[in-house]
Image: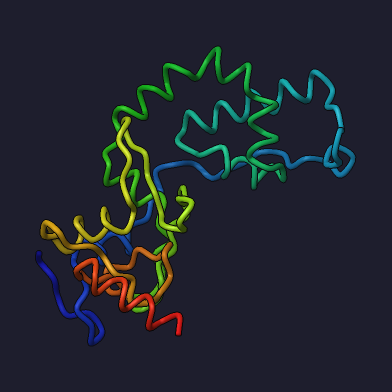
Length: 196
């Protein structure tokens, strides 16, 4: 794995390049936020306003914005926006979503779900979390443990019979600096010591 010295720390080049990556190819999000009268629970929007929100949401999603990003700009939760747009999405966006999903790589899906912070800070997984508190990613019908996936991507293969220990004791952290390869017995002993 190619790495270089960066501010006194050794950081994988792939991580360094990803941290500096910006995507300026999309136009800025411009959508009229919900008016205060439209924000309460059980509020029904006029058919014209609902159609306006649906059309603008579909346009922005087709440009690559997520429903969550559109919802934040609009001032509505992703689930509320999803309810409003469900019929429209099913009719017009299903082929687009399927095409976008099949074109994405596992690496892209992984990086979209990592909150990369400082080199020595925890990098929380912001995707799905398993019942045991570990990050999880389902991609093209296959489940992946986030910490193992990130470790294998940035550091290398995990030897057979070994597991990954979280040095920081934060199960949702995927920073490879906080992950170490150990045996299952070592992992249990380290976990026990940290709780004591």
